[in-house]
Image (cartoon, rainbow, N blue to C red; front, side, top):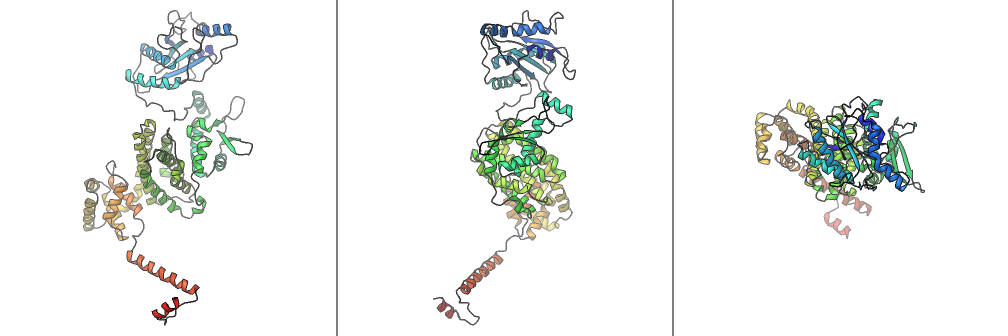
Amino acid sequence: MIAAIKPAGSNTRGLLAYLYGPGDHDEHLDPHIVAGFAMLGMPDPGRDENATLTELARYLDEPVRLRNSEFGGKATDHVWHCPVRAAPEDRYLSDTEWGEIAQRIVEAAGIAPPGDDLACRWIAVRHADDHIHILATTVREDGRRPKLHGSGVRVGDACREIEKVYGLRQLKKGDGTGSRRPTQAEMYKAERLGWQQPSPEWLQDRIRAAIPHATNAEEFIAYLEAGGVEVQVRRGPSGDLLGYAAGRPGDVNEAGEQIYHPGSKISPDLSLPKIKARLESSRPEEHPTARRDRPSTAWHQAADVLDTLHNDLADDTHAQAHITALGELLEAIAQKTPAPLQAELQAAAKAFARAQRSHIRAEDRAAHALRRAARDIVHTATGPDGSALAALVAALVWATIVARRWHEAKNHAHQADAARQAVQHLQTAADRALAPTLAELTVRPPREEARRVLASDVRAAVPDHAERILADPAWPALATVLADAEARGHQPHQLLKEAAAQRELTTARQPARVLITRIQHTGRNPAPNRRAEAARRRSTLAGSVRVRQTHDGQLPSATTTPAEQQHRSR
């Protein structure tokens, strides 16, 4: 159940006209009062043909008029409006039940505290099965104004209790870190103009997409403007950037003026100070454009960084920073990934945005590596090869699971749920990314004898999960990966142990697929030859000695004996 307190108004009669009217889409049916202050004798235009909206407005406004006449002036913004809506899957609620719910809401808000006979006047109007509107005038019978500070939190808590009492869908308690919901006016405007999203949501997507491309606030503003976003900036006398507001082209008010939304109002983590803190804490040692000639390296390095995420969550401030930066990396990957995966990755990035913020302060400098990986990705000139993409998306799945578990441990219900939604999209993307690789691996399995040996390696390296791995339809492809790695000088047993240590397999849906992406990533290069490495070091050492002797004018000839060389060195 959602109760959304609207900004205060000053026209009681005008709001009643909407509540008792047909609605913007003729959706208001049988409007009538289900509860209210001093119900006895209250006119109800929905049930009494002789009652009028003007008469009802005058009844509700009576304390306001008395206060104005006694103290002079005018009590402005005295109309309190709160729609209360049940979830689509909730059962039908009777008028009596809606009346009881309305009473709980006004008590929690401070409009009509329990047992207070001098409280504000209010009514609850029902004009649809699934919701009511509560209207109150915020001047008490004794002429005082009610104490409404913090009413939104109290009403939210009351809704959670109402859900339990009436057996309704139970929503998660708000924590004040969520983005502002679009108003009805913004949603109707988007529908009228043929926009798929209301302006605040449209702007939030573009602001988040801009962050990985910038290394400072000025670059961030320039990128927004280049992307077609209208930007209004506030600068100090020195010219320093102090704040910004963003607008959607074509979103104008009645006077034809561009409508702007401050970043902090679009989402709590998109204020300029918070964006600057993230950008300035992660300036790359090398400009991303200097690494464009190494695109595949950027994707593999991003996977390497994600592999270490679980090691960085012990400290809460570091954990929050890494989770925020994980959202930026996810956004960057969604922008650069091939088309077949783009929709799922964009949906994952959008869902994970809610998981990026909590009340825990982030130590942004701790997430330098993740942010640098995001900048490398958005500045790569080409996309990754198939195995690099599959490894990176699989790493994203695991990193998002790790983030979800951290939020669950901290009782961050909304953030954990957002991460869970992101995981679902990422798992779909991971399956699609791996499909071409699986097809290529399956058609060239190793010989039966080699497969038996590799199966023994699996049982020895990961005994707790061996049977699940060998029963996985992707096992033949995993056997091919292990055989390929062995041909490059790696030991399959060791690769299996390392892969299982990097990503626990208990919760893996398809453990063989997880191991394929891990081993393809870690075993992509030939294993180092220890003898060749030792010979190279000896050769390098001998060369450095020869160079030093040349600089000293003491280059030994081929016929110089060791004793002569020792004598010269003295």
